[in-house]
Each structure stands twice: as C-alpha cells, then as structure tokens.
Length: 542
Image (cartoon, rainbow, N blue to C red; front, side, top):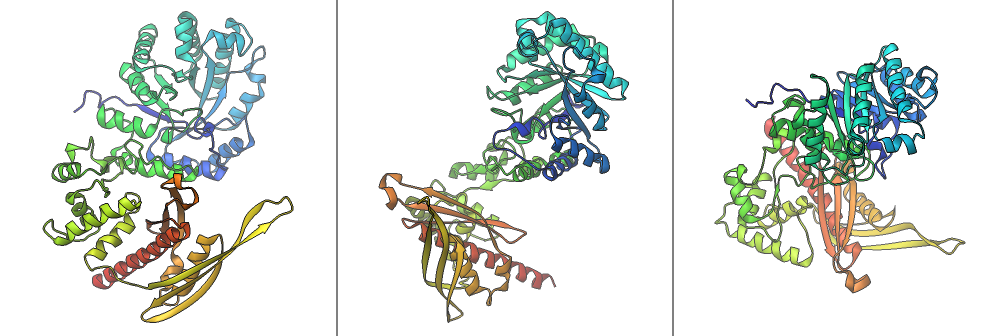
C-alpha cells in the first residue's frame, strides 16, 4: 500500500468558469448543466459553476441546480472580494452570490501588492480589510468559504510578508481553504515546491491548502503535482486543460497521476475508469475537437504503430505502456501504416475478429498493399474501417453489396449583386448495380459531397433499408502535394455513424470529388457490413 493512500486530495473542477475563458469556447445553460452532471458522476467533489453576478446565464445556471441538485458534488459560485471603500453587505456582487443558494463560495483576493496598488487602486491595508469583511459577511450568511489567493506566487516573490498577511487575514476571518494561484502560469515545479513548503511552515498546523495553476509555461500539471507533494490537499483544474491563454491544469492528467502514480485518493477507482469518457463528452459538448495525442485519455495515448513495438506489446503491454489503459477508461490500439510489420497486421486482424496467421500468404500481400497505398497518399491510421475492408478483400471475405458503374456531379454557382460566388445546390447522378440490376438515380444536396451521398442512398435504400439510419458525421480534406496547385492530390476522410457505432473511411485522388466518392462509398459498404454481422449474431444467438 502506498504511503499516500490515506491522504485525500480534493479535486476542484473549474471547467464551467475558468475553462469557459478558453478562446473559441462558448456553451449554453443546457450545456453547462450537462457538463456539471457529468462531472458529478465522475466523483468530483467541488464544481465551480461560474460567477452569478457577472452574467444572466450563470444566474440561471445556479437557479436550475437549486431545483434539481447534483447527486454528490458541491456546486460553488465564484466572486471577487468586495470593492474598496464599501461594506460587503452593501456590495451587489455578493448579493448575487448569496442568491445562488450554495453551501460553499469561492472568493478571490489580491495577494500581489502590485495588483492592489495598480489594479484595485487602493491601499494594502484596505485590501486586507476587503478580504476580512467579505469572508466574515459570507460566513454570517451561512456560507463556507474557499479563498483563492490570486497571483500568489508572484506576490510572494515580490513581497512575501504582505502576501502571507493576505492568507492569515483570510484564515482568521474563517476561510476553510486557502488556494495558492499561479495566475500567470510562469512558475516551474521547483519554485512551487519551495513556496508551498514555506507556506506550510509559516501557517498553523492543519490548514487546508489548495493549488491553482495555469499552463503558460507548459508546467501546470507538474506544478499541481509538486504542490501536492509539498502539502497541498486540493487541486483546481479543468477537464482537457481548457482555460484562458494556454489553459489550466488538465484534470485528465492530474487525477491519474495523483491516484495511479502517487497513490493519493482522489475519486473511486470505478469513477476513474470514466475519465476518458468524461474527457470526450466535454469536448463534444463544447464543440472543440479532442486532442487525440492527449496523455491518458487521447485516442492515440495507447496507440502502437512501429512493428517492433507492436510485437513487444503483444507479448507484454508493460514494454511500451506506463499503465493499463482500461484503468482510466481508454483502450489499446494497434495502428497500421507504411511503418507496420506483420505483427501490426495480425494484431489488427484479431481486433476485427479475423483469424490470420503469419505464414498465410495473404499477410505478406496485405502488408505490400498497405505500403503501396500509403505511398500513393492513403492513410489508414484514422480510417480503420477502410483498412478492415482492405483486409477482408485480400482474404476473400469482402461482400459486394453493390457495384459502382459511374457518377456525375453538376454544381450551380449563384452570383450575387456584390459579385461574390457561393455554392448553390449540387446535382449528383449515380449508376450502380445491385444483385445484377442496374440502378440510375439522381439527387440534390448542398454541395457535391452531400449530393453524392444523397444519390447513393436513394439508389440503395430499396435494397438496404438500414441505410436510412446511416449519417455522415465528419468530413476532412488534406492536400498532399500543395506545390502542384489545383492539380494536387487530395486525401479525404469521411466519418459515418448509425446511431450506435462510428467509423471512418478514406479516399485519395487528384480529383477531390473522386476522393470523396471513394470515402463515402466505403462508408456505406462498411455500415452495411456491420449491419449484416449484427443480424448474423442475432440469428445465431436465437
């Protein structure tokens, strides 16, 4: 058992407040509520929901949670100390905090004398009075207080005596937590360790210390871990590291590092296994593409591409994996590419439920085909559905649901008075054969790819009604040799889904429509294959 296993580290999530300051991120009240309930299920004990006095959205958010409270998490409003030269009881900002109806409140105060004089334009003594009066007022209203010491590390560096006075003032006023903030994100782990150690030695025994770090030096997670090992018991951060400028400490890295690597208690192990799911859910709700290379929770975090690596991992995952991916809800992936060896092909085949042996001549042929196609511009790392079709085709297991005989696309361009051109409707005509029967169909769409997809569906739905459940979920275009101008070869990735599963297919051509057509056709074929497999399994089980 770890020496740290008896020590609880309290996770304080500020995705819904500090995370919302991330450039390009904006959510509705409904989205904030969905994220809050997701964090609640993850087992996060404190969730900072926003600043009720700053905007109507946050006011309504807290009202909604009064009507339907979270199951276990404490929802916390955020606010600065009262303004200079008035009393806390008369500050309307604090009235909005009281109206939020929460048990806990987080109050931010100035620690750096520079900010007191130039930001607040008041005296050092008045700043201490603001901290004291605000906290005492909130406690008189039945609230428990977390005190965030803004710019703490910069303040301590420039005037340590005054910075410590701000903490003792908050503590004496009744704050239960003192959170040290690296607001500018400029500190390194050794500095964090030294200062937190100084604070622990300067304040009464048993105080509850927290840490709040930003990632401007790419050290937010390391700084949070350093603070904990030096004595902090709370870590503030955000899911996926969202936040202003370079972001906040990423809780998707902080939590597993604390719990798995250092042995502290943060959340239950059953909740820890939901971490990857939580990360991806939040990125989906805020409409930001997930970082596939993110540690722990990224889609590539446990992806193995090099042939020697794959062979080793197949024998013993510890050779190239620092933890079992299932512990945080992720999974191992074997990636196929031009760098692949036979071990990649065999491992990937097993993941598809295909029995393939190394001495099978098809294995060598598949590897040859793979390298040739990638040389031409195909990429199967992110298009596993296309690779499975390639694999089954080489083994004679690829069912031909339909045969393509040709297609045409016509696009209308609408010219406006200001002489700018916009895409109008596109008309696609496709000719296919199903069960020996030729089908000719046409359909319109907003853009050529949508029209092609619509025409294919129209031609196939009578034969395969399940296609009505398929949808295009993503479309990405990559120019492979831009120096050739408009004749450049193009790679298209198309994401598809059926409501239960998602898959990605690839097409490559110097004609972007042909590349798109390849990827769309593969997507439809793969979806039909999945449906056929499901029906077979149902028939077998019954």
